[in-house]
Length: 494
View 1 (tube, one colour):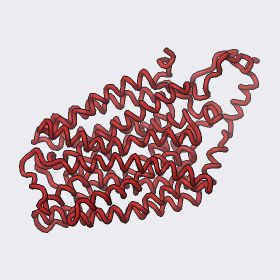
View 2 (tube, rainbow, N blue to C red; view 1 turned 90 degrees about the vertical axis):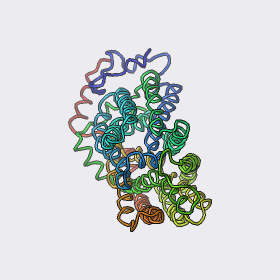
View 3 (cartoon, helix red, strand yellow; view 1 turned 180 degrees about the vertical axis):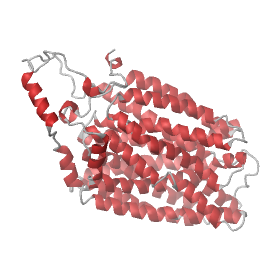
């Protein structure tokens, strides 16, 4: 089984050598694809990666789906509730550069398998925390970030090494469907399992079992592709630079930097809504008398269920429409991708504002506005990933993914859930149901202004996108290493 013979974890892949005599005169009867992976195996690889991405986001937002129960069980305020997401994102964020460095140099399949296995074990452990040890729940949620960092920085680079151009955009769209769908399923599974079991702990035990299945699929279905080979620039012809050199090159890439800041705004808004939207809708229903307050668990989680369904549907529509609008607009302008991202953010802002303002007046209108706001917000996911992949050369892509993860989470959803909770606590004048709702409502309005700022960053990206795309496409190695490789080619036997 050829897919078992990928290079070991701590053997740099560019140290592998072609067998002597395997020159141009020795053709195979059936030519191997440039990536080293058959078309059928490539499709299965994307399916497996998409499944794992879906599990990651399911796990991330299962906690948000049962947040009222967790607050009641541990007796915590909004600030501490926000820490559940912040601790996880901080761990994920700080470990991303480590896995980005490893992912550009070593076997990516092995790195992901170890990370996902660790994530599954830690997630299962987090479901057994007693009420006196909230800090242990925080610790385990932080450790979950280890597994997710090992996957999210690497998986898109594998897809980039399997497909190019329009086909790559299509496959990335499939991969990023898992973000809204997995997020929505996290709310749905969390709320339904909580209702059926009468205990929120069981909601955290669903994804670990599926995570172990994911590891088996990753090991036996996914095959490591050759970096950059499908772009007619095999990895051994690209100059490998140091990590510091990679970072300098990325910082001098305006399209990458500006789109990363735009994506940071997306992360800020989605991170805030992901944790707080179900709790906000629940408090609005309690304030208007539509639901009883949660005094003793299990709490009413119907808002998590509805929000999860909206997230799934709006996410599918948003990712699909974003990719399609971008595809059509590319026929008119090469600046299509950043313009569509800007449009999505600028259109989402007013609908999110209306959703927050109408919460106490009309629940139906609130859900409609949330649906529209999330649909426009989701237009960005696949397009931002595609921008990164075509403005960055193959040997720096995992590092670029890691850098984007660090910056977007550091200034985005690492602090936004905690910040929203902290502002809510500071605005709360009394502990009445009115101020539990009103303080959170006012603090969530911050998201609409951040969305507008993100749209401005994507508009700025459009000014540089053509030049940076051409620079990456025409990148060639230089210096002593290139001369050495030319001499080696000249000495090679016919």
